[in-house]
Image 1: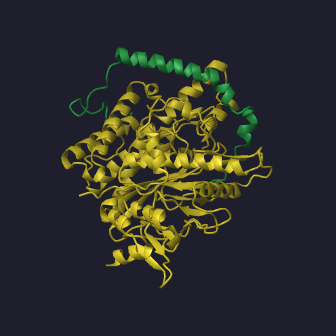
Image 2: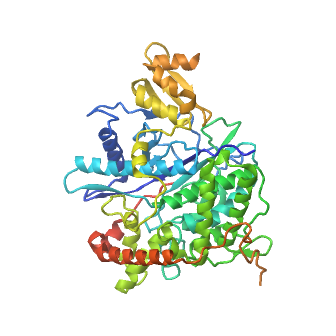
Image 3: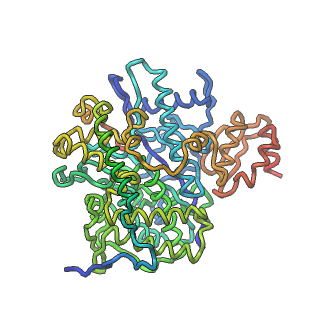
Length: 502
Length: 64
């Protein structure tokens, strides 16, 4: 039986330091995050009492295929930059030259959307806090997109807990068919192409920000020669029982419906892969060519070549995957997929595929690529512009502007999945149904005693004896149901550790 | 010519067919169109003042 699909989303935001003279994105990211930490009360003026990330157990170079390729280098871990743990269980840090927020572990797709929205609100509060301390003409602006239109891309990664017993080869074949075709609802839209040798004349508008940057089918890289299936094998949990599937092929979505479907459908597909329940597989003759072909065709009609010599469109493959997932849930239930949330995902998935089939523009209030296309096409027609006009690229970038008064995504009437009042709470409160609850509550109540934290452990210094590491190798232990009463009963970290140890 | 893998979506027994455009839906699409017009009317006030310079200067370091 498939295991519960714990989900997390990591978002790297584009960053611009306006009027700074000599912009340095790494310094700007540090300024931004530090401003938030001070503004949100994580640290006192001049002090440094934020709980820092602990890298002891990080091994991003391990490969799920069980081999270490010499051509494939693990990313450097930058320990010297700002790297904080938030009371909602999230991580907020400088990654490469971008601020990145990783949501806490979430038990279902709706919770993942809630914490992704909370991350947006954290980004907005960070910009406001930075503006307050910068010289009056300066401003740091964040963009929730994945490309600068000049060949530089930054990611939005998804993480899913997967049963270690599932053969990796099965994950590769099942996920490739989904990742290649789910773009029809997960794409955030992009003006032009950044694929080598392709011009805006050939691809005026495409479904995704990211498809142009994928060059391999399977691999360990995340920054060069990006693969459709990333093999980083770093479970941040009991490695004998679990994998963490690290998905790098998706776009950052301002649309909550796109995010909901992105993680919800992928969790369902993974459950079918674990239970080997796919009645029928779609293996592409050329997956990298297929992922670009899907992205480059807003009419959704391109036939994709399969290894058996036949063809299918992305929409046809998505209908098939949807049908199989529906049947799976009807047979096996959805307890491991968020219960009723899985049914909401299936219903939304179905209505979106039906809409795409009849008229994609009918989804302008649900999907990013459609909302953006409708806006840009409307503007283009009104002003009689060519697709190569920089004003259209400016609209594209500004769709993702995180400033509420500038964001175009905030103006196109996108439906929401979660209420902003809940998301405001989620900026500081952890989910109650994963181990993020324990992490977040420890930081709320005993932050002075927590010297370091990471996904699978917390390190305490309670003064008297050696540092104490509390391992959290089970993503679904440490929930409110398990440990909620401890936080009510314990007045100190010493007491908490004593109760945990007994 | 390659044979089509799947000519049609799954039969209606597996899912409801797409809903026909109802009067409410048509009304909604008129509403959406009016909203787009309003948005296009105000967009020049929101859009970066020098689009060409803005697009040129929007340069990011590659990330993950």
